Image (cartoon, rainbow, N blue to C red; front, side):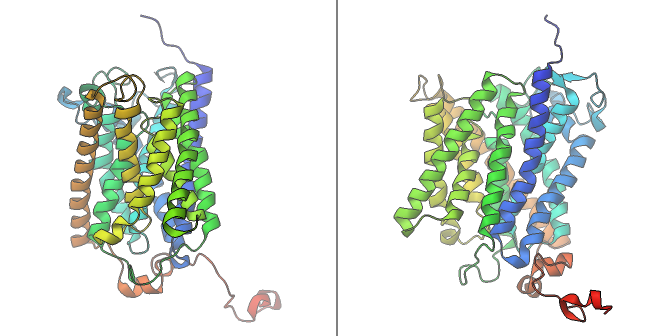
Length: 429
């Protein structure tokens, strides 16, 4: 057996990828923060930063072990939580996973866990107690993300001997997290939106974004960080990473054009919010497929996702659930589109690209399993939190503004209320 040695090139790329995926968290905070009203911008951003802080602690403590530890009983359901408890055996300079330091791989995958939890928060903007959100984030990561990530990301023989059932037994393809990240978060967002109910004024008054330049800046940072998310999932600096990078661009630009086309036909104008949303829809859809399709397949996936995600935004009004920032329309629908289209345009496995229906069936099983598990468990956890410590702020707090009510801060101080006016301090007031 050939001895595995450290690759400085792979290590450098993966360290850069950790930074890129980390950047996605403040990118998401800006993207979501700009889409809410001014009186809720800080709370929205805090939900992303809070998720990052809490989930990464849990990741070091036991999350990595639950995801990448040997599958308990060899069933592919959950990893051995004791095998790498507090990263024992991995948190030193000599431990390798593949051709990179184990510490770098741990950090990379830990950021996946953090961003997945943060994605959910967009569904419940403007009305959620921060403490209850943090409780949900920790419980959800433990009961939902860690098991599902084991199903999808734990390949036999890579870190542990026996991995997850979707990756190994089923054989569904998910290169960077269409199921484990986006369908998982989208289903959870739907469950939370149902449990918490609608915002005050939903469907009656416009609940418009307060800062569209912030939204577009956040989308740009997400796009930039997504190169680490997708291409970094090759865990090497090689041709697979290059293919993932190219397809990430191709699908995203196609989705932007598709979303804007839908807006122009339906509403008569193309919007900056639509462009930013198209960016994220394309990124979501290509995530599972970025190493399984060629450039033409990436364009198809991006265009289909842009159309279907744009059309799906209206579902919340039709069915009466308040998914505040369209987590369901973008992440759940986009994740389903990208995961299923592998079965149609995947190179050598897709129905229209040299394969039959076998891979499509595998992809569909993976979609249904993750969606159902995430929705059911998320709904139950949210209900328990709501019935015990309460999940939603009061109506008065929501009307006055969640930032002031929960954090005692405002995102924008538009006037100075100190004695003496703006120059009061300099006058000794």
